[in-house]
Image (cartoon, rainbow, N blue to C red; front, side, top):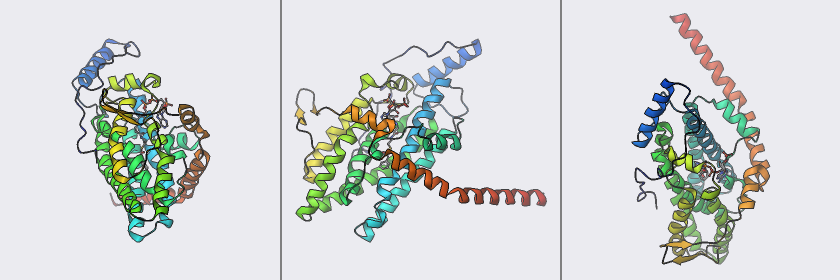
Length: 340
Ligand code: FAQ
């Protein structure tokens, strides 16, 4: 829908230049820092074995692991509906989508591991509640129309945010995002198509779709993160070519792309202030409830506790699989040693 036409110029986001976080400790380090800066300025890629500033590495571990956690926790609202899908076709689509999200999480954990962190540490941070994951997955999915709306709006917002990440300066993250975005595009389309079908159905079905849109719209706008002025990581993230487009710009692009889709669908977006602004060439929209966003991000949303408890249980229930895989690998190694 909007993935194919969305390209990011090479120098986008490079105008803000915060001062270096710390003075290089030695001449060698200064030379490495200069090489790193030159590669970033030339829009080159940084690879796992390249020297990188510690703050760059930490920022990437933070963002990539949060992203991975979001994909993994993001399986839960839809996973709950697999057994209640209205037809075999919808069930097969939903299973495939939820599986994709699990795959995205695993890709992203692997990308983060190339930066020297371990899967165990990342999972421990998630399970103990120390790590963040996307606010959006702390809201309940109440009816079947939510499955369509999650595809259309949640995946739609995710794609808008992730397409620029395909050109992130860190190679493994950028490459992972190319495949992830292709799959997210399918996720969005299946959601929109499911809603189109419901909107051609009974009045009760149309009401369900509108109700789901009412509940998810504002939460999706908040997914893009705090306003640029309140976003502590944006300026440096953009300087490093990790982020290419700011939170507010992406949010605006999402609104502009989604309004016509809502018109085709025949739903009303729940914002009385939403209107085309000829002078700006964009849609104006109303105020987002940032207090509610921060409450949710900080662990006090409607579903935070339940989501984490479900993840921890799934991890614990899977312990025997990990142990069996390790025992098998150990046996294979022993056999190989004996044969050598
Ligand atoms: N939820 O200074 P900024 C998906 C935190 S994947 C929770 O703006 P930054 C697929 C932020 O981490 C969805 N926390 O930070 C799917 C930071 O906290 P920290 C996830 C949020 O990193 C679909 C603090 O606020 N996508 O949906 C949120 O420069 C359907 C200050 O914020 C990604 O992770 C939030 N919404 O920009 C799966 C994409 N927003 O670390 C299943 C990659 C901000 O200081 C079903 N990530 N925070 O404690 C990014 O692009 C960026 O990290 C942003 C935040 C844009 C999320």
